Picture (cartoon, rainbow, N blue to C red):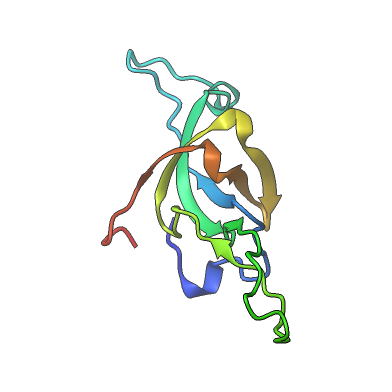
Length: 124
C-alpha cells in the first residue's frame, strides 16, 4: 500500500491513543504448504499492518497556572504516540476493531495493543 497525499483519509480524525492500521494481506499458506482460508488467518492472535493515521495521544492533566489572574484559552495538551504514519505495526488482534471505509478494510487499535513497530525511512 502506498501512502500519498491523495489517500491519507483526510476526513477521518483518530481519537486519543488509537491508531488506524491497514492490515497486511496474508497469503494463507502455512510453512508446510497448506492453504488456509482467510477466516483462519484473520483470527490469529498477532497480526501486522501499516499505520495509516494516528490519534493525538494521551491527554495530559492540566497542572494549573502559577498566575491565575491571566486569562488563557484552555487547550488540551497531549503526550504523542510512538506510532507514526507508514510504520509497520505488529499488534494484538483481540483488541482490534475492524472497520470498512471506502470499500477498504482497516482496524483501529489502541497503542497499548501494538507490540512492535518497524520504521524504515525508505519504505514510503
